[in-house]
Length: 136
Image (cartoon, rainbow, N blue to C red; front, side, top):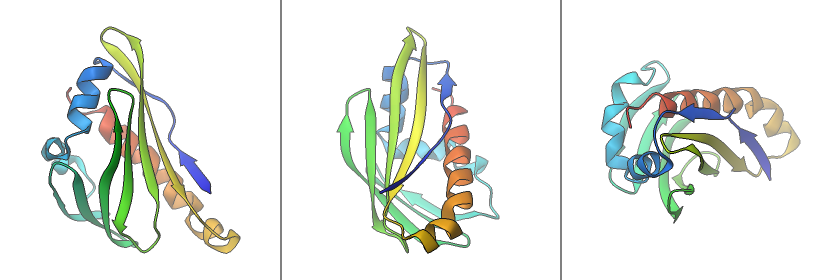
């Protein structure tokens, strides 16, 4: 399995507050307008899943497949040209600060890896940046 990890983001909120917000996808309404419209279209979501069209990839639907309270939220693809998993990991730093890292894991052959490595690495980093900016 090939993994793409974001850099660690520090968030000025408790681990519990961040987990509470990110584990209910209805809270994505707050970041919808911050997404780059040239790359992300037709975002829709409910409490446990989200669907988005990402250019040039196409339609992707992610669903929460596992939650480890306050520590980790795992997503799996329901619809995607390339199946993958996404983990949001949270670790406490202080009472009102935590750190977050995003990881995408997918099975890729060497040819596909060469094609998608740069956009996936940039994508996971931009996603982490966007999640770090949410008011918790």
